Length: 416
Image (cartoon, rainbow, N blue to C red):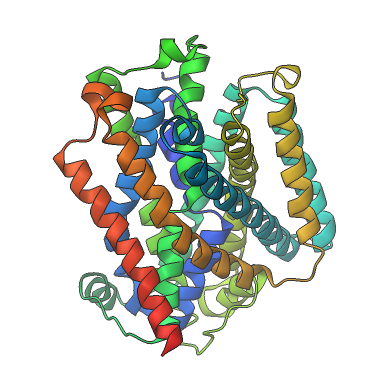
């Protein structure tokens, strides 16, 4: 243990870091710039929802022994399965494209290299590690990359905020019912509870079991109370980490850009550059480095997630513990999704705007998939004695209702 301190960090910390991907960073930075410290309350509100959705997805993989869409295929009719797969797959592709653009914009701020070249080079490096690296190597790299997110804590401290005002804004929500504010709430919910997180976490529980030698489904089916407790602790740590980071991202831009009147962020590079005269040059470097570091973690999570979605949706198998020759379709999808994501970056879309809109789209797609997960983890046939208890059931269904309500409120605001 002493020779490998990262062993104390389970799959939850990777999921938590991936949840704060460049898409999320763009959304939270935009929220802080546009609404200032008055948006800090969203972090504690999101925490229990973030925990429950990741926990039920982890529980599904750990107890049922299959990834999310393999489980959906077993439990639901095809007319339910295929739309869910299509939405999740499409969301993964769009998120991967937007995040590659985020990496390019941020890294171009630090090194004199054209953004298109950075996007292509980053994609090539990521695919090479996915295809030629082992699962254990990827897991270790992801854990180190997760540490890049602490840059946002430092950036927020450098902003020298009024900590009394910060505390008041955190515990005293200020909510308005205009379309712009509600769109940002839905975007924050969507990017914090993104569908790719469910896919990733459920499948990582399966990958961990396969790495332990339980290669057949019957060997993985079921879980001890101790295993579930470890999973729960892992998820709690990961989601606390993710939530603290999102809080400090909003704080860093809310305490600097918003008071300075810079409420419109058009790119990751602009967000980082704008911090320099307000919080010093180190803040710019920290903000940009955080985008790059977590981007290299999040993009493979998304492209691999898309492969999990499609392969499991059509009833095939594939996982990162398998060699390329053993899971040709799985790795082919990873490569194809990465190529499409790179291509989308040459269509001229605004990376930061795409990141926010992808969060809004995720906000609309979250409720039906979360509903399906709650049904499966409450099903005795699938979970046995490990089906959801009353607290998980209550938190899960409240989260379903909140996500539905946020999406409906946005539609009403747009229509009025």
